[in-house]
Amino acid sequence: MKLKDKYKVLSSPKAIKERIVRSVYASMMLEGQGVSLEKLQRIYDELKANPAS
Image 1: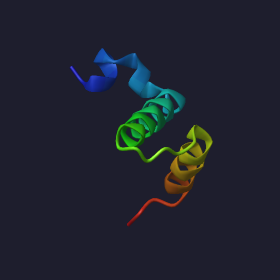
Image 2: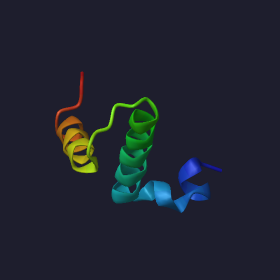
Image 3: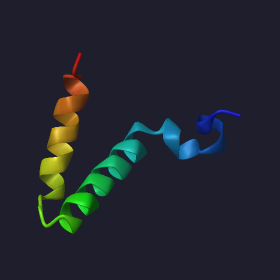
Image 4: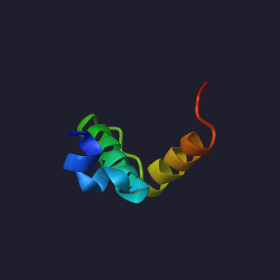
């Protein structure tokens, strides 16, 4: 069984984005490096549009 079969939410790019952004946000807050969710969403979008080679 593949992960996408077991966890249907992995099929949704919007859900994946939300989970990644929230996870990074929480990690940064724990380290005392607060950043807005909007900024993290913009960074995610930029990285998605221009992936590292």
